[in-house]
Amino acid sequence: MGGGAAQASAQAPPVAQHPPGGQLPVLLLDVMDTVVYDPFFHDMPRFFGLSFKELLAAKHPTAWIQFEKAEISEEELLRIFFADGRPVDGAALRQHMADSYRYLDGMEPLLQRLAASGTQMHAFSNYPSWWEMIEKKLRLSRYLQWTFVSCLPPIQGLRKPSAESFATVVQHLGLPPDRLLFVDDRRANVDGALAAGIPALRFESAEVLEAQLRERGFPL
Image (cartoon, rainbow, N blue to C red; front, side, top):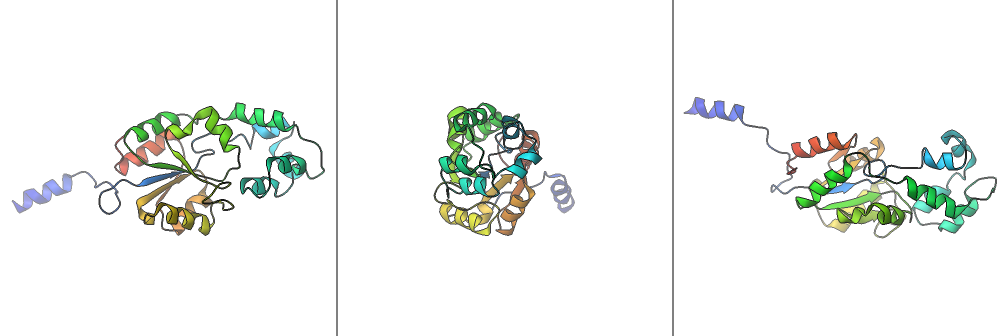
């Protein structure tokens, strides 16, 4: 019997990587270039007739980050967008960005399945008030809560990968870090989560993420 039990044990499937207690983690999802295509790197430069490198050289050095942190308004962003003070057609830029937002391939069906399985999901995004344009077009709130956006409480003024941003998320949810699972396309943000004790995955594609979540016991 002992040998048979050992053989059965050796052939058993790997144990799913659940947190203590067998509960599935709460998902913290980056939005831009994880769930939604980010127009900042290609579409925004094209709007201005510039390459991304040219846009970086011409824009105000901190205005976009200040906008993400709600330190300045959209009006102020547009006023100081370029270091040389050239005017920006704000309405046209907003429309251009809105037209560019779209789900990354495979992400909406994956979110649908996760939501249907009862998985709790929260956005955790460095993004300005334009998150509302994303919501209006793509309605992410059908699947997740816009809980953690750098322009809104409870993390207003904080951006990944700061330790304070992750600590605030943990405190707000009232869960131990190992009850969470963070997903982001940027290595620096993944490393920030890991440093905070939060399990984390670097996003590559919807297909890869689904396989990783299945390995962790998500019923997909």
